[in-house]
Image (cartoon, rainbow, N blue to C red; front, side, top):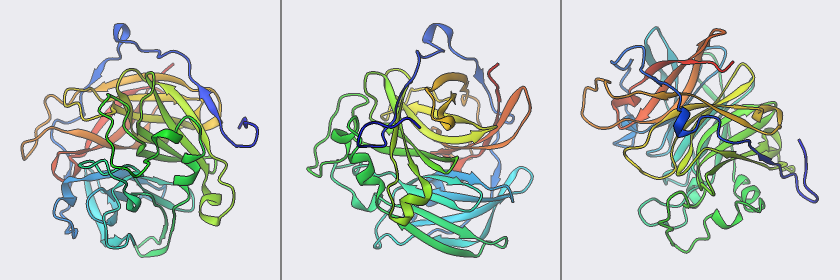
Length: 337
């Protein structure tokens, strides 16, 4: 990656948003309007089953689940059109306080779960418990091995000039301007040995951000070589999750604030995994209008993972907040030429 003098900082200026309002991508409905069944599990936190926030699957079929209530996670498998748990939830050491886990990722060796690194929603006060990234190993039977965590991402973000003023200063101030909330991580993926953290906020001049660090260095005390990728998404848009498909990054994009009427879409971030200037392409907007929920509420997509793909489409599993057990839905997303 290109480096700036004195810092390993990359500002990958993206080209113009390729799918403007005038040329919006098609809306795509899920394969079925009825969400997949999910095996019930008893987390310690009361709302955990309705707060699934991150999901990533390894090649061996084991998937890690991040939950933004409490401080537990879980491993799962996909069986047909059903999600089943492997053993009991595992504990993430967070001083008995909520981690605010928001994203999960996997590479050939490890599973990862990250806290939001954001301020508390109700008060806008500092939230040090959310500033951890976890690295885990697990065997084929779901027994957790190593659990390590790092708190070094916070300092890496503070040293990125464009983000420095949006890293929580600890004084409980809220900025009500759309898109200008302090740093909030919502998505994560791993590519070529680097952890990529996709930010829901801030959105500055219609741009959203992805922070990259060397995955091993983050946990081993070495220079994580932070990078910053800027992508033009539009007004009040932010990243909700990130996954890798056929060597390219796919992002779940939604509102950078809590706008209930906002669209959610799948955007290809061509060039991101190669450290090049990102060329964003909106592939589809998710049509949730006819989804049949067992309980009322409005779905807010939170996590995506690749199930399979053909030369014509990506088949993605989408989990949402606001639906029982994540209300898993499958979308067939057309690929860009």
